[in-house]
Image (cartoon, rainbow, N blue to C red; front, side):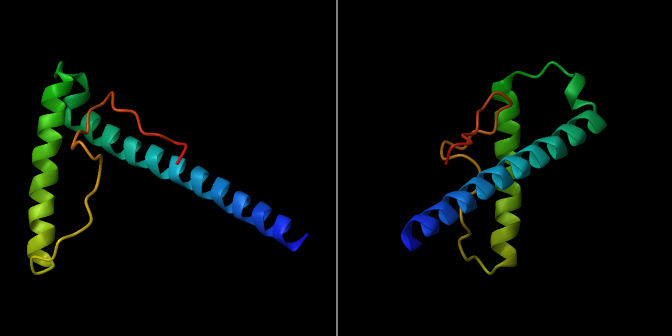
Length: 95
């Protein structure tokens, strides 16, 4: 029976981590939405492709600064594998 309870404990931990991941994603989305609203970008008609390009440029700028600060050591990639950061990009909550 110890194995069954250990599996149930792991399942409970996985579910907690999924919920935590969802919460972090929502907080991150809210943070960027607030910045877009504050700057007036939320009201502008900007194509998703243009938003993606702008966010890619911003990310590249901060990745460069991060590398300089760490002495050129490579950091783990963030965001999506394809480099997109568009408004309509879906994030899987099942992992």
